[in-house]
Amino acid sequence: MSEHYGVRVAKSAGFCPGVRRAIDKALELDADGKKPVYTLGPLIHNKQVTDALASKNITSIDSLSEVKNKNATLVIRAHGITPQFRKELEQSGMELCDATCPLVKHAQDIIEKYASQGYDTVIIGDADHAEVIGLLGYADGRGHVAAAAQEADGLPPFKKVNIVAQTTQQESVFEQAAQIIAAKAETYVISNTICRPTRQRQSETMEFAKNADLVIVVGGKHSANTARLAKVCRELSPKTLLIEDERELSATDLKTPKNIFITAGASTPGWMIENVFEKVQLARRKFYYMPQIIIKRAWSFVLKSSFFTAAAALCLTYVAMNLQGIPVNPRLLFLALAFVFSLTGLNRVTAKTVSYVNTKLEVAFCLLLGAAGLFAAFTAGKGIFALTLFFWLLGVIYPFSYYLKIKKLTSIPGAKDTVTALGWAFVCAFVPAYAANIVFTNEYYLAVFYVTLLVFMRSILLGIGAANKDIMVSKESFYKAHGLRTTRFTVGLIWSAISAALIMLFIMGWNVRLVSMLLLGNIYTAFMAARCCRRPKPGSTLDETLIDGQFYILAALAFCSRFL
Ligand code: SF4
Image 1: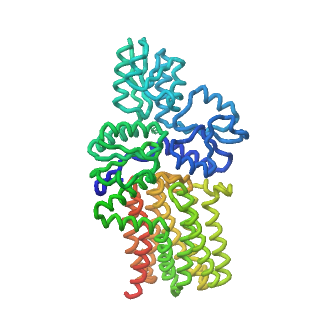
Image 2 (image 1 turned 60 degrees about the horizontal axis):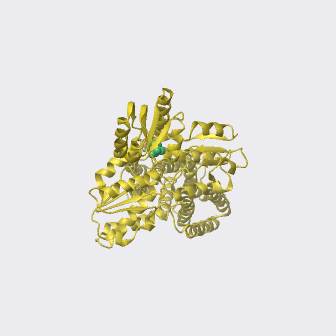
Image 3 (image 1 turned 90 degrees about the horizontal axis):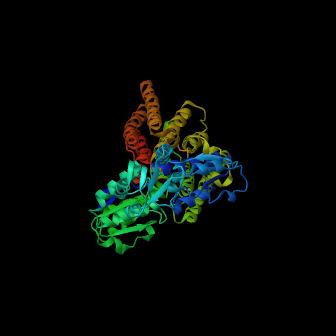
């Protein structure tokens, strides 16, 4: 995220790698569906995220006694635990999944190493924080905790001491306290274990908070690192607000400040920060004339309502009809629109249960459009109706598989992208071919091939944006399952396969006017895909527009080819 109209969003805001890793592990286990999944304490201090995890049956417990059936998996949080407690857990009979952040593990290893050499350990951090409790367990019974300089002053003298930091500690607090402890020791080691993501967050905050008239810190009120971030901001900026979500912002807060800086703790998902950013922009529109913001807001609504995607499916159906050389059938165009609208909407509601306010209304509207689509299918013939009903029900069940305990499908890497591609291929290419009685002809295979690959690529690209907004998807997303490198390679491969097929058709002289136009469209697709794969944090609205926009462009080009 960046700066718009005096509002800057911290680049480092959003889940830290340790938190993201722990959530991914829990989601993968849940998608696997082998055993119930428990976490020892909430995975992160963010109510919306923990509610969303609970809705997926990932249960947070405070003690082992809460689990009656020990045939379950227990996830150790990013904060880590003491070695003694780990032994206890290993004997509990439950399967353990260690999601301790590697950077916390690094701090544990340092403490263990020096403790084995007879060093005392002083941790500069919060004594009651889960991470610090876990770290103390590695100090071989010679551990101390000091929150800051004042408490460090009260510690006894040491012969040999290893001074470490809680990974989210404030740099200046650590340095000050470490100097005081070092002065009390005959031999000392200062191990600055503040993690890199925290340092980046702090240095960005220092740079921008001091020039801001208002700093908005987004995060859970019980999150230690968010509270620490807010404290730093209060020292630098005339006004700092700590909010859990955008509803806590009032218009008066946003009226006067010229420069606003938005940052967030390590346990705040990207989509929540985006919601705050949008609210701030909208509120400022009332004080400054910003037509761009109104347009952006309206456009964002069109995208979130799935209408843009549904109309993109209509466009792709038009292209597929042209590829198959069959007359354009408005009823089947509407069927594609309604089918994709209802299923995309239901998918979005499930994926973002945490970000949408009026979920029931949205579900009702999706079901209504689904029924309208089925009616269109019914009027097109019994066979089309039966097949559409079958695939539509499959699509409806897929996002709710968490609740129906059908979890195997979501554990398959890239399942979501594959299912989406097949669903679109069915409604955009198969249904028109079936209605025109040309299934299993060369034109039919070509259209299915073209639609499936294009939609598979689209779904992968959208997955990059969703992951970077911290929307909770597991390995069912190709990008989540395979990472950026393989995703880039696969997208390149798909694009090359489509290009090669079109070039071959052009050389063979098959429907040259249409093929030339689709080749032109493929150039746009190349730029759009390169942009989404290259940028580490795709901006949601623009990227979603560009990705689904390819189908509008292809339809326009296919339409133009008729007049060449
Ligand atoms: S704050 Fe740092 S150490 Fe803690 S979980 Fe996040 S990345 Fe890991």
